Each structure stands twice: as C-alpha cells, then as structure tokens.
Amino acid sequence: MDSDSFVYTTYIRTTPDELWKALTDPELTRRYWGVAFETEWTAGSPMVWNEGGRRTADPEQVVLAAEPGRLLSYTWHTFTPAWAEAVGLDRAVYERLAAEPRSRVTFAIEPSGDMVELTVTHGDLKPDGTIGQLIGEGWPALIASLKSLLETGEELPEPAR
Image 1 (cartoon, rainbow, N blue to C red):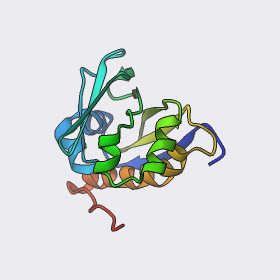
Image 2: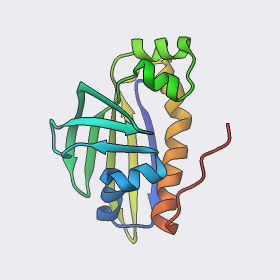
Image 3: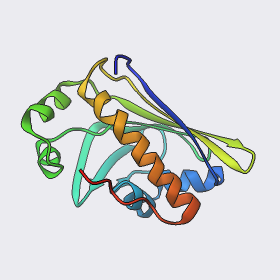
Image 4: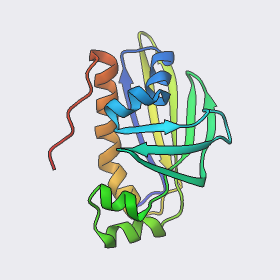
C-alpha cells in the first residue's frame, strides 16, 4: 500500500443505531473482532483495548470523534511486546509496527434506504508501512464478520491461517 490511508466501503442491512451499537458495545465487538473497548465514547476519552484478557492502555489511545449513528473515530492501538507475543507476531514485524507513527480509524455511517453505508478509513499510515499491509487484509475480513453478525445474528468464523 503506497498511500497514507486505507478506505473500505460496504453496505449492511441494518440501522445506523444498530451499527453504532455493534461498533461500541463490548459484548458485540468481542464477538466479531475479539476486542472489547473500555471508554466513554466521547471525544477525548481514553480507550483501553481488551483483547483476550490483555489490556492495552496508552495516553495517546483516545476517541477522536463520536456522533452516535453517524461517525466514530479513534487512534489506533499501541503495539506492545505482550500483544505481539500473544498474537504470534515475530519480533522483526513487531519492531516495524512499533516504529511507525500512530494511525487513526474512522467509521462513517450513512443511511441508504433499508441499509447503511459504512465507510472505514484508516489514515495517518506510513506509506508502504507494515500497518498498512496488515490492515489491507484485516479490515475487509473484520467488516465482513460485522456485516454477518448484524444481518444474520452470527459472526463469521475466524479464517484459517
């Protein structure tokens, strides 16, 4: 990826409020993402990422914008050695990730008939960086599982690696 942003748009048969809930409710995010967020969901609020019992907190990990049913934006998580070990990342990849600048993700939610248009923009990426390479595969899979959960009640199984 040679850009500083990754953009992905999909349509989900749901309401803006249900999509917002799926993006912010820890019980739902845990189902399709494996992550529960601890935050107040207001601009400036700190965010703690809880993934498989590992809590990642950092003063720069914050909510940037939160307009229920419309827009959600936050800084991307901090890469720690414990996180890298838990997800099976080799040391060289972890070191490249940790050296990149902090990025941000934005979810734009727009009604579209009986569906919602969801645009995910992951920006402030290092062009040709490791984060961009990983999210290029990660976001489509994650959003597909979110879409499945909202439309069928079941998240997708984790892909085989």
